[in-house]
Length: 236
Image 1: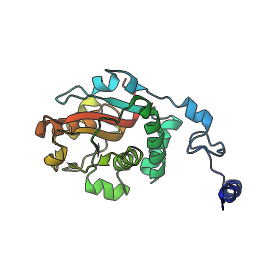
Image 2: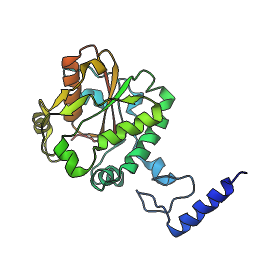
Image 3: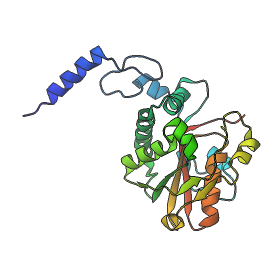
Image 4: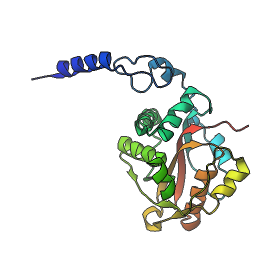
């Protein structure tokens, strides 16, 4: 017996009693809409960097580690309503927001087979003290959401060897100094010769994710590297 109608009826009743609203504009969501209304979804400032061979992220991540593919979902303007999505997820313990954004991004990246040659997904690690304070690592949540949508395994291959201050108010040089020598590879055998996708929630100067890539390349030069984030800032 098909009870789909009963579930849909129940969902409609719950929507009336406990209306879901768009996390960007506050409008009530229609059936089939998740996280954002259709209007806000269409207006999201998508980067589409994955359509460019040498984009601004490649330029920002120039260093000792070659980056093959680099992309981010949308441009992150700190005071914008879209940036608030990540801020709420990170500081208000709302990992479901990251899960939904990741799922949407994967669906858009499938059109160019972005994940076809990726072997492993690796989140930017968080020092255990910082994780204890925040409750979870948002980059790990992103990595697991990407894994669920693509079937690519997440490997806990990196660790943050020490705590470090927030990057938010630091300039480019200070961010680089803040991350120098911070990350270490825990298991070289797990990544040797693989194509890794290093993921973080937001890429600003790129100092954090570049530090991870450079350490991986240092201990395993044959490993291929690509990067992905949800937000990408515009540098002044």
